Image 1 (spheres, one colour):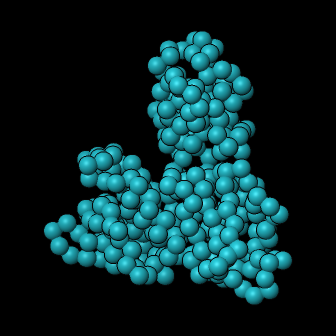
Image 2 (tube, helix red, strand yellow; image 1 turned 60 degrees about the vertical axis):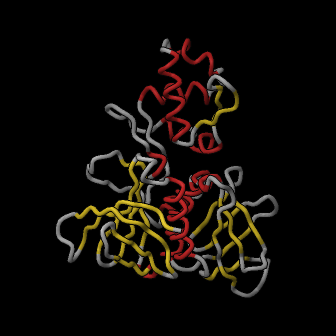
Image 3 (tube, helix red, strand yellow; image 1 turned 90 degrees about the vertical axis):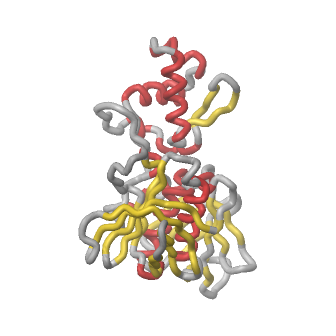
Length: 297
């Protein structure tokens, strides 16, 4: 499967920033980019040192919907999609990113205490159509199978991870600093509810920021009202705000993964992510204006 993306190149041997429209696909252990008008570029995924989401894409004639970067010894390669559903497939872009993580992490040795004495292999698989709603580990091809979702806790210390499942806690030993960092990046994008509970890991990776969405002042006021139990239909009166403006804030908070719709007429409630973040969200520094979609960082 391939998907259309915008390539932003910087780094040694590239010079000025280059923007190129292309199709991206995973071919074996390589990322294959096929350019409009001819030509190809391949990236050996084993050379990827990090995957980042805090990337800035210069104006290119359209609003950027999503982006991520691959860091190698030669520089940074950024892939992005624009808000044009006729040209760019958002689901395909997420699937491409998931496939990159699979290539980077599948087969990595891990140990599960109390399960088997031998070293097992890690495998990442999406467990729902919307990848950001869950994540799973399969330790070797026949199992055991462990699923980690929003309702489940986890913490770690160094290379020892203690993750809660529907049963007993699972103690995993994850060797390799690069692998642990990539796993955290993976959680941040595909299961942020788990990522926010793994805060002990951030001391090992100071450049990895906790996945805390940024709210403007009005969004914070709306969010706090709902989080404190105010009937969503009563929030406009509570804040003395127009109903349309409050509903626009609900839409933004839904996109950021903090609210979910549970009834008609924008009846919403906090998500597990919102409950997990709680006071962290209310302490986020206010923006000077406009919205910032911090949910994808």
